[in-house]
Length: 420
Image 1 (cartoon, rainbow, N blue to C red):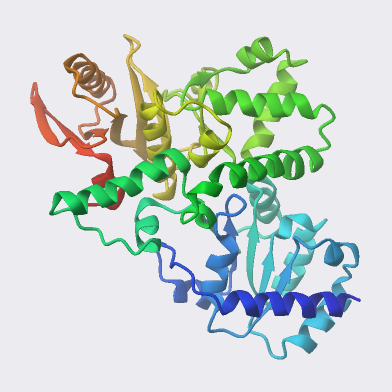
Image 2 (image 1 turned 120 degrees about the horizontal axis):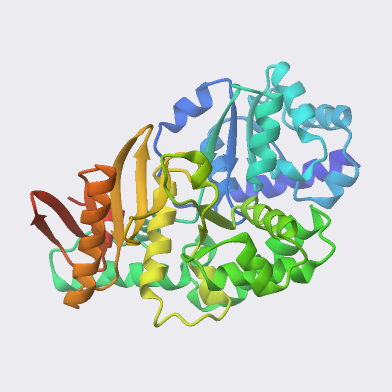
């Protein structure tokens, strides 16, 4: 019976509420979120902490709970019986928490009905396009979306009870050691204190996302093609790619199939694609994109060599932090190539104004490397007219003035923590 399933889920909910969790860093008052009557849509990749964030949000409230990562609930779902059971099990509930809602067929119609009845909803989901498109069509202007990604650097330090201190060499070494672990093994909450489990945990998560969230949901007939494409993008993270290149290198049947698979890989927040900046949208859509992965740990989990990839690992880490800070790959975040083919890692835009040009280089001790990074920033600044130039490195810090233009060289750990 449905009521039995919901009772079992209540026991799970209560057990989860008794646990202590690290508080997530979130821009905005959580009490204000709950006070509003709009739907709270919490999105992000699997295992990043969406459910925990929602439970923290609701902990002191009277709320009902349904988890749609439950085959029994999905198999027996009947909206009238479900609502009757919820009212019996959670009398007078103020909020309804629907976890992993995308698993329920035609969920958007049911959610719209609940909203019209005045039920205050908190919803989580792991499929970006499905959720945003269907919510936008069914409930335009009636929801707020909050993206939850794996732990940030600051959240990782807090989770490990490490204070942000760097006055002594020992203190600085401690926080840098944490950053090295994030760089190489990622920051999914469940493995931060169990690094020996990283490979097995993230390999299983990788397979689950590809096979369950993508192949099964979209009825992909050739799973090997999808898997090979995902592995190729993971191998070439931070590097430009084109659809035609994928077809040629992977023997995929057609450009249409390759493009379709690339789209599938973004929906469970596994990959993100960064476009090359151009004032003309038509030209921007024609050139190669760069692929980024949601967490550096997937790279280690798939057994790729890390020792020579420090620069790319750092660039991927910076990209994910820019997403946390509210930039998005459709309107405000791009990469750039100058007329002389010098590449800028990130162009950050605020509406129609370019805000910052960011270059990422793990080590600039080699004078040739340093001159190359500075020259790219200067040339891009001349073409784009930004004025705010930032070079992020592992641990170098200075301000360089060239031809009247100031370039801020900053350690990435300070930038991640908002120091200075």
